[in-house]
Image (cartoon, rainbow, N blue to C red; front, side):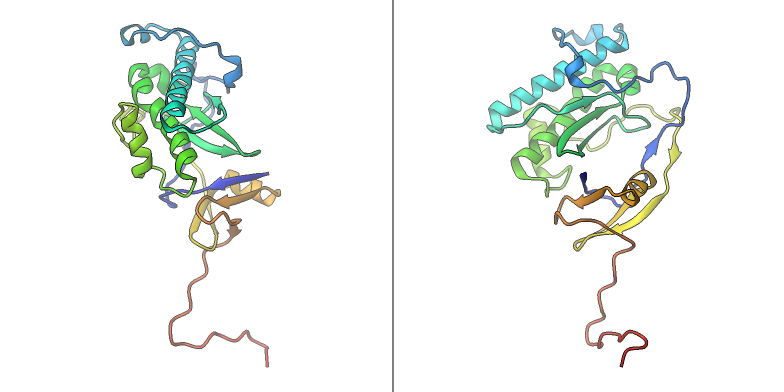
Length: 232
């Protein structure tokens, strides 16, 4: 299995929630198991139960994908859509094992602010898919290409959401140093232990496999290379 890794901020700490009995937590739901419903007016969204909001988010995702396919003339398979994201992040796009694009939404934040979630978070994540499909995976995640897609959707190209998340329980994951020929990476403990078990992670920029440990320092110009101890 292989997973592409790339972050504009290698030092960013990933936040995930502790186990709790929060009734708003929802299990992972593949897109194939969700039946789309007609679009509901924003004024009606706050009264909907979570399953209905998840159907509405799925419908909105599919609508934007089809709109982008026609406008940008790009072929993009339907992503694996899930509502299993925890913590303070509202959404996430990643290339899962098997080279399948996966879109993950935070069901708790969808239930909390459905209007803003559908208007901002859903196009935010779909725009990542389209930008990668049109321009390749080497682009900056929130660069000009992604911003252009957001404007096409009529959404403000903001990198971060403004949802109230201070009361969400989180824990900080330990991070481990990895590197590739072009940059340093910081993998969470989850990915680190998967790598120890045999999974390979790749850089989205140079497409080379990540290697454990900090990035080696470049030799100082003008100094001869250091000879290993014990060599003649």
